[in-house]
Image 1 (tube, one colour):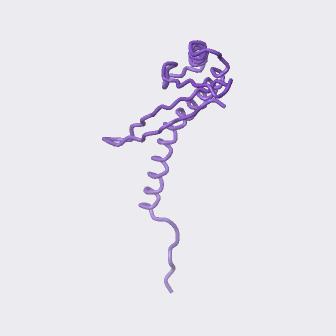
Image 2 (cartoon, helix red, strand yellow):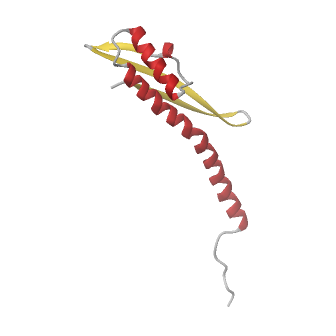
Image 3 (cartoon, rainbow, N blue to C red):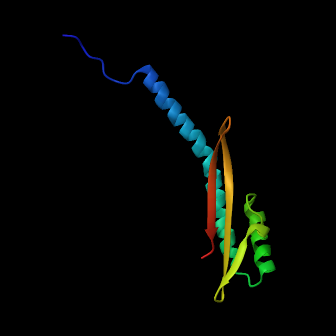
Length: 113
């Protein structure tokens, strides 16, 4: 009787390793955008405590300076009122270059509670 070998081939290991490496590189580029989105959400929540539009933009600008927010500026905020409550909304896109003509587009939207 012939012994059958079991396991993964070298080509299989290279393929799985390549997929894991690609996934790791993409995840490493996406993670900072998620952290920045959380910082923007916190800054928008803080800014919603303001009463006037210039005050809201100033509060957001100060929070953005502290948290080093570069993706969105205070002028990009959409400020509205719901009754007596100030609502601060925002939306922006982030592009991550994958290779050649390929990009990963992340669309972030949010608003204060």
